[in-house]
Length: 258
Length: 258
Image (tube, rainbow over all chains, first blue to last red; front, top):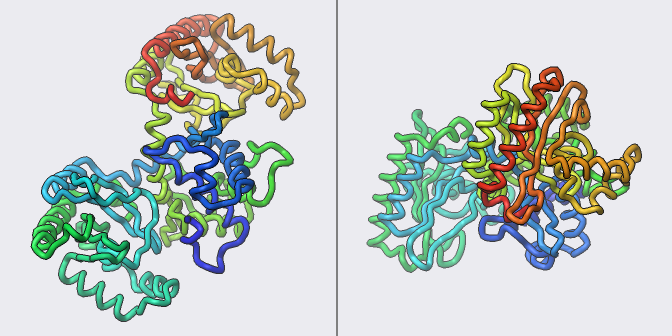
């Protein structure tokens, strides 16, 4: 839930309303262009009266369309931001080609993650070819303290970010997290098993700017059962090579905002 | 302001917060990818403390990025909806070509408007070639009771929409509005001068589905000084012809949601 992403103690009524609006809106995606009221209530776990009120507000603002048949769809109001979001965040075609070749090599889903505040967000994804594959949602903030991509991104984050992360997660120790991130930064790649989710593994490497800053993390992810020691060796080679290639090609105009 | 779009009496605290969030977000567009706190406060006319709170909330939700230099930009969180919004609302390339040819013919800005609830929204725009031209924002809800495009869209709207519009605008008379809309519907085009804005004129015609429903309005707009009687005659021919062409080509996948 979006609300979970908000620091405890900072949630007041207005803030909660905005978070709920995002919770409702993020149920709509390419696979779910329409949603019924029942689905929205069930998936957000909000009271029906709250959902109805949020939907009516978003409808009036053009962000939701009440189809008048108990279904809702995303409103044309989002066009306000589509062009800007694409020009800011879309990964260039050359970089996408490298991602696609990496999928062809490894068979696993490939993502480019960036750090935004205390979250990681996938800005591009090319799905793996196997039946059982990893699929994340682009544009959705995920936690920044677990997973291979997160560790790579932390390698380029200021010390204050590590401290803030540890503040929000009492089970984290800032010194051991820092040591781990530093080690990964020196090695040039990260491998994690079951950190984000049981049964999910990942290999990630940094995409760097011309002056060596960590811009993003190139990551492949899939079921732990496929990430055996042998395959991980191959995956590490492929991912670090592809990340270096994208670093030299450039991510596209998104680099200006990272 | 987005809040103005919400029916009086229905605005409570939560609703107001969502409207304010949209007010802040819609300041960001291709021409303004970054905004300073000062600009946001001035343009929304909200108290600075409110703006700071809304920005912090949107930041935590991934929709805004605090660049840490007193500027803010649109967050990668919008990628959640970019693909869906484009597949739902993007006008097809063939229809856009007709729009571009219409601009070449008339020199005026061309828009395709759809009706969403009690608003009209531009889902596609090709700007005119003159120095003084009409420019509207795509994705932003505009009033449905004034302007050529609005009158065309009302021709395809149910009676209940006219009634609701009149309820919100005590200076409107439902019978005369209905008569006007019916007349325009029969003529097949609308011409308005200074209805939406003093000095702005427009000519619009309906884009129809295969079974004759009004899907959208094709509209050209510009300064009244250029919309002389002679030119308007030419404009009406060009717009009705282009609208008929788009009707037969089809608007694209957006038709499924209109």
